[in-house]
Amino acid sequence: MSLIEIKGAAKGFGLPGSRTEVLKNINLSINEGEFVVIVGYSGSGKSTLINLISGLVKPDAGVATIAGETITGPGPDRGLVFQNYSLLPWLTVEENIALAVDEVFKDWTAAQRKEHVQKYIDMVKLKPAAHKLPKELSGGMRQRVAVARTLSMNPKVLLLDEPLSALDALTRATIQDEISEIWRQNLTTVLWITNDPDEALLLAARVTPLLPTAPATLGEPIVVDLDRPRDRKSLNHDPKFKKLRAQLINTLLDAKGRMKPKTSVKLTLPDILPEDLTYVNSLQFLNRSGPRRRSDSKREEVEVAV
Amino acid sequence: MHLIQRFKLESILLPLSAILVCVLLWYLIAGKSVITEKIDDFGDKIKVTKRAGLSADLPTPVETWTASKLYIAEPFAKRGELDQGILRFTWMSLVLVVQGYFIALVIGTPIGFFLGLSKKFTIAFDPIIQVLRPVSPLAWLPLGMILFSGVKIANGDGRTVFGASDAAALFTIAICAMWPTVMNTAVGVRAVPQDYLNVAKVLKLSKSKTLWKVLVPATLPYMFTGFRLSLGIAWLVIVAVEMLTGRPGIGGFLWQQYNANSYAHIILCILTIGVVGYVLDRLMSVVESRFKTA
Image 1 (cartoon, rainbow over the protein chains, first blue to last red):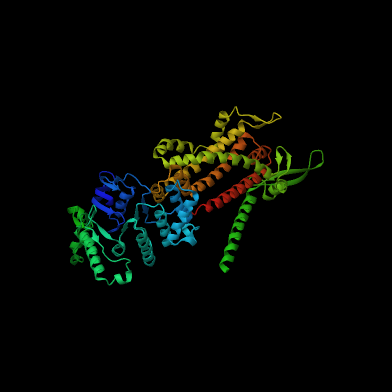
Image 2 (image 1 turned 135 degrees about the vertical axis):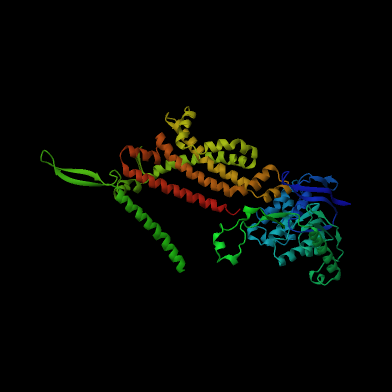
């Protein structure tokens, strides 16, 4: 049974007149325990899509449901990991996680909650940094704290909005492996959003491309049936991986290619006409009434596709 | 190493030479006492003291120093109700400033939060605030006198310890010093990054927890900038208030010395007020920078 369902969702921003439609006709269903990755271009509405599920954004049309119930607002059953970590800078690692734990597990004793916090600090291997402030941590460590904070709420689904895009490639690889490992152990449902096709294929059980049409729509999902654990070194030579990668990238590129330039700009040419310099030394040139202006005769514009 | 030395030397020498230039200018402007001996109509020798200079009544730096020495050398002495050491007067003023300042913060911070949080509240109250904000302390004081004319707290001997003028002074300091706190808090609340608010939403934090765990810490740097500016204004206001009410204090002393034609003490007061204001500002900016981390 699918845990999360989005049916016919659409979303746009702005007031009537200057409105931009971001998402159109979004249909997505995620099964319990599934690892789904959505890949798309930057700025194509990926964050809006994940926020439909997190509840930070309400769809204009269609519905988003979790376990059969319509999503009306944010809640701790959907753990959202933000792109920029969003740790509170005045709280230590432990306090940041405790903030979530104390809120979600109000009926636990203080000792139980403390133990729970410690468990997740250990899970992301941050025990030595437990009492440090976020600014004292590296980018990778911060994102691990953000993941720990989200996981500690025991969410039904883990939503990750481009979680690793601010990290360097090597750190990114480490954390990809770590989160992949955490998923294999806990089998939480994961919806991961990224702009990196390789990352998508490395992690996902199913990859859905978000096509950059305007407004964006979801493409055909690609099932990634590669064995786990996936080793990034051998994957590069795996023919199956190469085929899937080509399929995914082609889908995205084709959709981008089909996007004909729709806007055009009218350019006004310089308001001066060329002169015939062969007459420079003749009396005729001296007698002319100054340079000729284009605006004197008629306005000329060219249309340029952007 | 060389650079540090040069920097230190410059940072001492340059201000010193600027001070020197100002003192020289002061000498040029100030008049000085010229004592001449002459023989009066009865044939006796008398000494005539005349002041001469660009501004005949302005004492020279040396005269100022001689006249002020006693007040600085014994800063806490009490020779009479109107004749006390300079720091004793300063202390009286500071006590009043701290009280008024405290009231300003207690009232100003919540108003700032309301302004920052609610658009409707802002639209409703912004015109009133913008109109009241530039009103001078001199204008508020009489209103305070009227408002608190009935206030009178007496001690055992029947002596008034807190009267209408004290209440009016506090009122004036509070209402004048409040605005920077109000405005900065409001700006700070509006500037809380949406990310932090999203965290609060996703974690489903309660209203009060969102306020204390997210909004207040995120606003603290702005609030402290406001607090610092407010303290500066409170210190400005105290002088005006003391002049008008005649309360003993640094401003009261200044006014009383003016009336007593003791002009050197006016300069002493001005310098003391300046130094104290500077020290307060430094202290606050140390506190402020402690909260800059967020």
